[in-house]
Image (cartoon, rainbow, N blue to C red):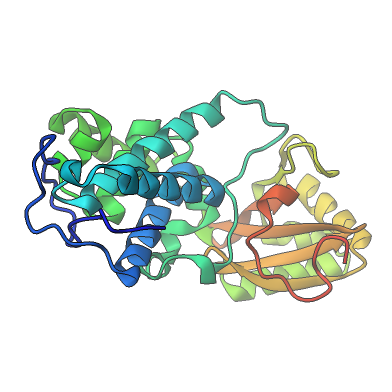
Length: 314
């Protein structure tokens, strides 16, 4: 990508774009390292807002392409702030469009190999867990974007307001409301400690229904995301006994083959059953497994590093 017209490599300051015909003061092209850093930042914003890596990539690349296409005389004073605004709006468009589309069964955020996450986000891995991104789905699009830009990137309220075409008091309200909801009614489950995952796997692999039930909360839930592309439960499975039975039967079909993988900064389990790859993540409430997220849609499993023999069809 040509970067000759990109200007302003500093941190976002919320400065307004230069008026048409005015040359941006101190204009300087991004070098390759700066361009890659900014793209990683846009990817992080996009993934948090949309929950899909593909949408994040599309928004980041389109924003950069739009900046490259500008006449140098129209270049913004702060290109990084301009790119953040454009990428955010593109992500909101994708998020709203997706919510109007039909999806078969449960929808889960796209899981990605932790190594793919931008370095700045790898340090905030807990906030990128699937359970957290799924909780974001319960927020309104503007609430979600405002919360991400403020909490994850500490952008000034004025800059967020400009990006979202909103008043500053409104943005403050969105962020406050989102923060409250994520701490109360849509609070995501906690990550599972290794020892609890070990207990769950041992119980399931041994076919011990009662021991499996003992690891689960009474209202445990299995969510399977397949979009109808592979065989998977189209409705959530709810209740400890039903979930335990499902898990034991699923492991029987997998013939005991299970391997740990790192996904979104936490341990997940890769399972292949009848040639179909499934990646399972676990959420915990009060020391027991409360949520099991089954990622089955092959379109969403392209950015994972799974052990040899665990690829779909392996």
